[in-house]
Length: 177
Image (cartoon, rainbow, N blue to C red; front, side, top):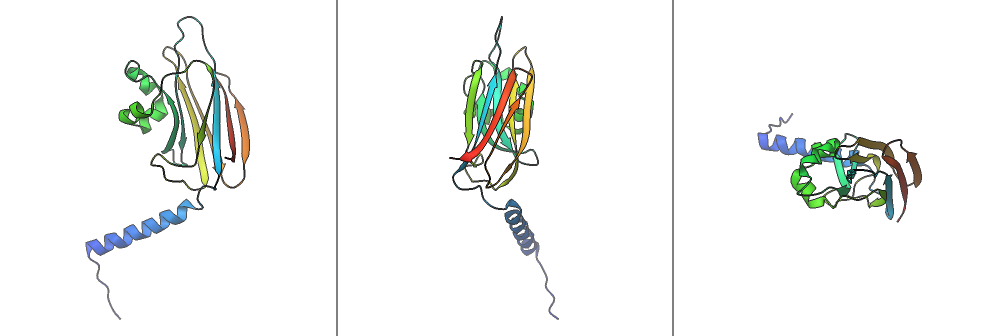
């Protein structure tokens, strides 16, 4: 019987290889070709001293890790002290990323963004369960978080959620591009 002795390096390579193989198996089938997820959201507001809200629309994996930022309505410079009001997104992002991705705040209305199935690095993600998040915060106003689990697979779906706050509606449409 032949005994095998492992050095630290060979042991590390073997363990990392098994982990990589397990990760590849866990990821499952790739994002279906030609499919996209449209996230439409609407918010209302107005009145005396109304300030446009900060809004983050993003995708998380099952464990709650940030996969992709779809939209970020923030005011770089002037409003940076309020960025942490987007509580969930703020904990997962960095100020540098927020400065890079942010656009101006927007007045009340309807907005649509599309997720093409890629992560922040531009790599395609696997099919599976994801959380779609729309986070809304307004200076001297309310904080709202919409977070819904969706199953990404070969079958299209359409869901609409009516909400009771200033963030009044979120619609998800998973379809052919």
